[in-house]
Length: 146
Image (cartoon, rainbow, N blue to C red; front, side):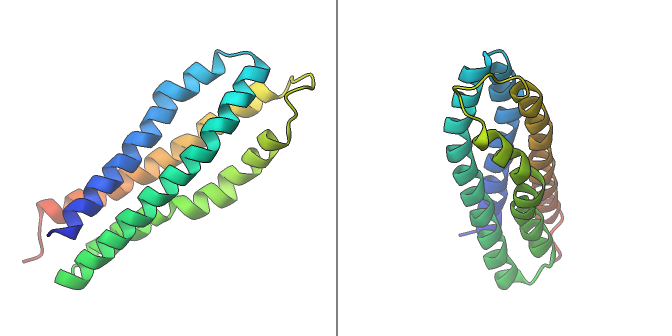
């Protein structure tokens, strides 16, 4: 078993999920009316948060296992990079999430489109984190230390 290869695969799944959100889901969401947009975001937000969190932790754990097997510190770099999605999501994205969750679908929603557009821009930060982790894992897979 090569846990490092699996760490790379899981990080690639993380990257793919964030790309899907930014390229497919978010533009489609922005074409909806205010109420429908908020309802769709609320439904997708919970599942997306859980999915990305699990993928980040799984990739980091697999990277740590590989580090313990071969001692190459680049596995730790990739694992820490993918785990950076947690503080990014909490400190950068969470204030926007709270604002969007606090909006009532029954009220006149004028700021929701701007907030949703800003949320979509912040989501690209997670894509960059996933890309950086994949690059780190590809680096160690392509150029082993031995």
